[in-house]
Image 1: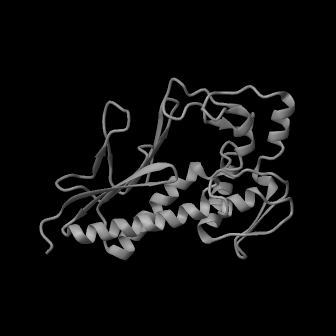
Image 2: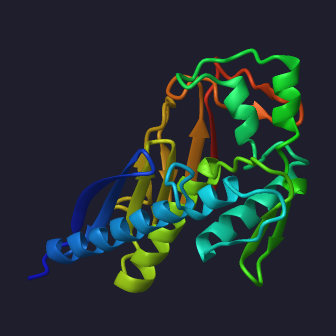
Image 3: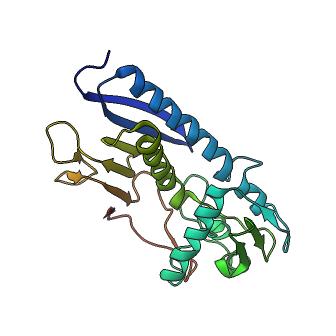
Length: 248
């Protein structure tokens, strides 16, 4: 039977990341069912948007020759379209098509690599949203050059948390929860018991208090060199800093 509300914690591996969920609920069984529903939805999302899944929408775009129409599902269209919006707003500083540059600038172990001028030029020629035709009405994405390499990682985990939050609220009526994607992206909804929000530490001297907000950060220590400026086709030196951003 339902009792006093408390925090229930669940975890799950998806997108090569450990996701954690803290739910405020009065019924342990229902909290567990809600968590299972979220994890199942997240696994389905990974099959759709991961570039490491051979037949995902993203993999089919990446393997498409120039000019071929690729029919995609809703989440893929959401992510690729949103990526284009940010690309336009940042004048190309943020680019989900950065994969070819990443492959020549970064070794698989995360250390910086020095490509030849020819390698760099060839990679840069395959990057940029100007090479993608996006038709949201027909759910079509059409690469205009071959061997593009979209990497939705900069958006994918946040999108997964947004989807999880919507499912918890709309399908389960749960409004107080904290979602965590690998400690680099967090989403806090409502409050934890006897608090004004969700207190989280993220490598800072003082904790962040999240209430209906998301927090995301990046740095060098965990992932090594991985931040690229597509406009200059070069790595950004962030070895001495960690950057966090909070948004509603």
